Image (cartoon, rainbow, N blue to C red; front, side):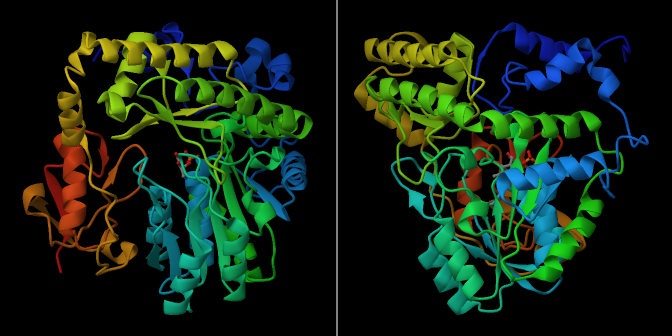
Length: 494
Ligand SMILES: Cc1ncc(COP(=O)(O)O)c(C=O)c1O
């Protein structure tokens, strides 16, 4: 191989050169939103900050100096009893929360729209998941909130569950009523663990749903890189003691050793310290700006023929969930068009929608480009010209029908816990013969990386049909083979 090549560096450079209007994670928007406090200090000297545990720089795994102070400042800002820096994303925070809250053989409620890091936590801990289903928003084809009533019902059937793990806000910005859910959990002596990966900014503006800690969660994780200005992989875990599980508090620090590097990056940790600094000083203005930009775009997109943009009360309004289904465009088509024709880069697409994440570091021009692109697409589709995407109303609905995915399936029957299945002897079967078999692996269409099948579940026909839609269209699936195709599935040899 040609060792003088730098394919990754080149790819990143090429992408930046397209000067995209950027609506993806990380929220700092190609450096624009990095704290000036940091850039003023580092300038070109960034690499000098890539240090390790020197006599001055403390130790993440046993903090008693600068890191300890920085974590305490973070805890004070969010009203936590204790906060931890994470250098392996919210992924490791979710793993540590589950690993600490439910031991081998113990039960834990897990919302079925959980990110796959929850499954990794279950594999590590050996706990037995009991799944709870969030509501569905049929108009958008996405999962909505988990209701307190469904949690109450779940406890009636499983009063011995030690904790509930849920995601709020969801990727699409849908929030659950965490105060009501916390009350139900605590009344049953159980902990509330919230994957707040997408919600680190909720605490800084009254116009947003209440943050998990303020609502009564015992633990939550936040990806500070997603919308609050830190570098990719930089996240935090907060703890607040409601008197439900003091032993769990002790286990958290211990379990973070298990899931984090012994060489934590000081670039990531410095970025966390500076992101906290900006939020503490300017958090409200930052969120205000994102909200204003998103509202501006939402109002205009709503007026474009054939386009819709999601609204709602329990919803993070800095997210733009956009659908052009009425024009016969799936979310995947819309995403492709937006980037290839207009260099507008969305965070994700599903069969119906695209998602733009708007942060403080976006500028008016980005939103103008998004709105103008949507208007042009609408105009083009109405005139039935390029991309041949809407030749007639009839064709448009046929096209839409062909691309319509079935609703997210109910959890299949769990034969083994994720841990037992993961460590079992496995064989392989062709995907076409997989229905009815006990999966030895996760299957999670990506994005958004929500498992449809957990290891240990008997692959139901409903789940098989759902996954088949992604497979048939060549969508990315976590759990597929090296070539990205799900031709074979690992099954447990029972
Ligand atoms: C809901 C949710 N939780 C957790 C994660 C993992 O976060 P991280 O990328 O910080 O590890 C993601 C990633 O997208 C996510 O969407």
